[in-house]
Image (cartoon, rainbow, N blue to C red; front, side):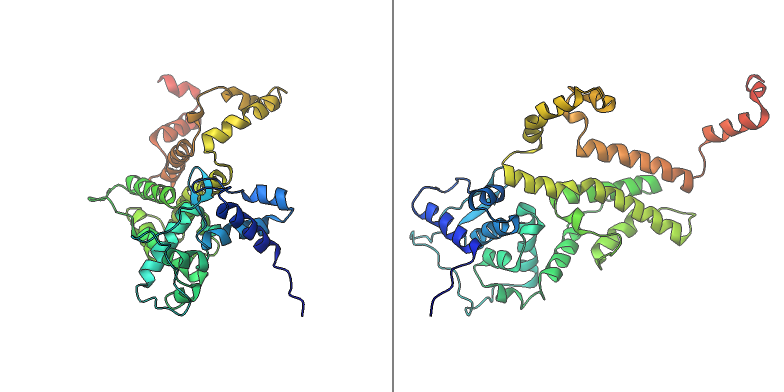
Length: 329
């Protein structure tokens, strides 16, 4: 009986493994990116992604933030012999739900949520993926537990701000810093299909605890509007992480390579707003500046609802009602 040929991704894995075994690719060298794999072997992006995932699972490569996927150092024991991975039937008594969740967070923080799989997390412990199913039901439950655990790491300020605006601002900043530490988290959260995450809900309750004088429906709209703003502004963190691993360039380096292209577009004269900031300091518009600007404007708008119109606005209305001559009385 003729044996079937291995699937395309397996053939590519074996080819890259051969380059590593022969020394063509040494520890620390970058391996072909997903884009390079699609070009060199003529396969789809999904196949290329599976190649790198398999190489990571087999311990041949590792992701390095700011660099990309590189050949991993051979794992060795104290005597210099290669470490033997556990077989599927061997004990996993050292595992626990908390350790599995923390390992999942570590993988997602370094490689993005799309790189996360049960097999990938199992590789962190040197066990089969089946060992993880004794502690979590599957990837969906694992990611939910990871997200809730991430929120548990937040340290609330003590004493807490008593003013409603200061409390909401503090809550927004806590979320922002959390999304920076865990770039995958913002995109995982959903406003239309909210996940049951008690620790995340506790932070939102704390954030809104000093807003008075609004009905429950208005209050939840205020809370979700704030949450949606911070989440949407932070949603690019994971994309940037994955792009940095893919290209080996951080955001500043990538922008530098795109500068000639943008200059060509702006030269047409059709984009005066963009041309107005061309050539200025690149740090003038950053994720942090967008967060700070948007948060201040958002809270300004909410203040008109929570505190009522500003005195200046009320005075302007009075002038309008009594006529312009009243201004000089």
